[in-house]
Image (cartoon, rainbow, N blue to C red; front, side, top):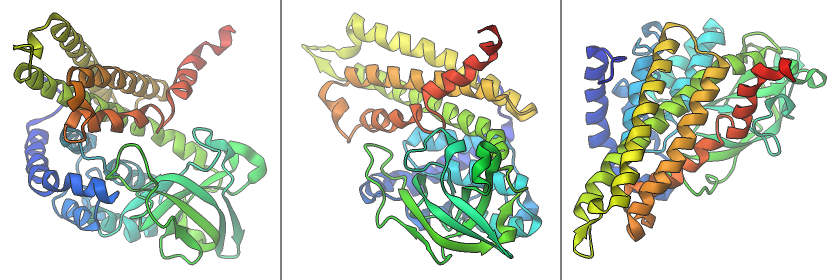
Length: 380
């Protein structure tokens, strides 16, 4: 039994689950073929209080807490929808809430909460993935405006976005200390997007794009927080992003384990169910044991995060363990499905493909291991 959620959170879960079953599940396969989740879905999600759950009511949000956000993440993971809602709700809106001016909050947050505009965050660049301090996109102050030039890639919600929070170099010689965050609206002259979503091996319903900035001018007031403090803000928010990825990974694995138990119990091979073979039972038993261990660990970190923000190291551990275990055991579960595991008609195949990027996005596993090991640098 999980203890981190209150009765209110579980009631909200039922609301989210009903919405998903009615408004999402029938359309997932079409959205995957289209390579994008339609804007009409975002407006419906906003109308049902599913977007930006932690934003206060004064800015048009539901006024919930991080546990409400966890519920949304888990229920979307349970049905296998790959969407940019975590970026929109758990990254873009918190950045605006914590670092944006009152004018920026009033301008963007209510529309983000209603799903009228979709939010994105522009960090990754060609040749610059996890190494954010070496981004090349620049923002130069010209009177009351910023002039932005550069390119971003692998940007979630890039096609749909109405506003992107852009990591820019405002002091190129200062490395990490020269990064700022600037809000750029999609209709700004000089801001263009790739003609169609980038083709990926998974996460097909989540639109991913390249963004281009050619002398894009935005008001100086679009700066989030202080100039050259952007890298600090990114580091402050990355632990929550990584915890959300870990939480989703745990739910995906649990959901596919349950489905695999049902499948192996029904599927016959040589006159016997697949589940009756010792190999199958042992594989499923091992996956269940590690699922249970992962669930307790992640839930404890969620509890700590609600009480006080978890550390960079804790978040790195959570994402590393959760995504690596998810990858390992989804592969085992797919094998138990035989040829059907390779079919897109079965959830295990889609989950297996979608899961692969989790060991890269939000900090590659190798980067996370380096972060975790830094505590011992004084011993070297």
